[in-house]
Image (cartoon, rainbow, N blue to C red; front, side, top):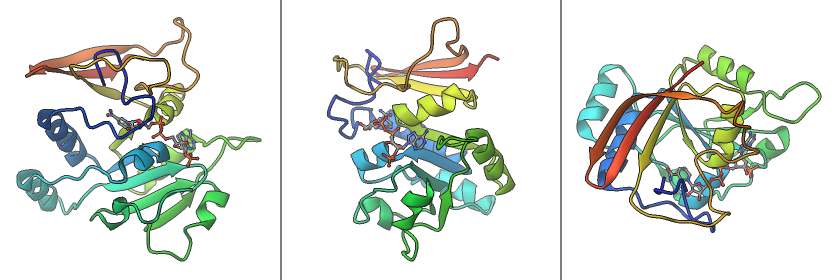
Length: 215
Ligand SMILES: NC(=O)c1ccc[n+]([C@@H]2O[C@H](COP(=O)([O-])OP(=O)(O)OC[C@H]3O[C@@H](n4cnc5c(N)ncnc54)[C@H](OP(=O)(O)O)[C@@H]3O)[C@@H](O)[C@H]2O)c1
């Protein structure tokens, strides 16, 4: 995020301001994951997803019989551009969506798994506790949530985020409309989830922060 806590600008363009060091940091995080989850807004902005490319990281995954982590797109509407470069990237792709959103994708080769999300009782809100426990039954224990702010807010509201990795980048975006690491309705100060700082590192003009949720 920028030094003023924005993850993009008000046009929600692809946030390409992080340095090479931060991209390598993301790649190292992804290399430890069974799967990664991101919102449709993030996919619409970038058109692609982040890959593990470093030969040493790939070799380590291969030793554990792993290829790229599974890339799970979360989209209520299912309205995604099938010509996006994401669909030709060498990753396993899953779609977490609604029954309506799923209809657009059945019978195509874009996703290995099209997964109508379980929802909360008498509601169309995704039931994250059930989704995460179903992921565990599919051997997905370590999930890296790549954003954006709307999806992070939904998972943080359910208190299912254990760790937070923030990189502070040396620019100010400003404005009220630019997305932040956690958007949604926000929390009151009394209910805001707290974290413990477990490491911090400065590389060039960026600061890398690693927090663990304090429950
Ligand atoms: N700097 C960074 O590290 C970073 C990282 C990621 C993203 N970004 C930036 O963040 C922006 C995108 O963030 P965003 O907040 O607009 O979008 P987002 O969270 O990536 O995606 C929002 C969309 O995801 C789906 N979604 C989100 N929460 C959901 C829930 N609880 N249940 C069901 N579906 C849900 C919906 O898809 P449908 O619309 O299809 O229904 C929703 O419109 C872009 O500008 C991108 O560049 C920056």
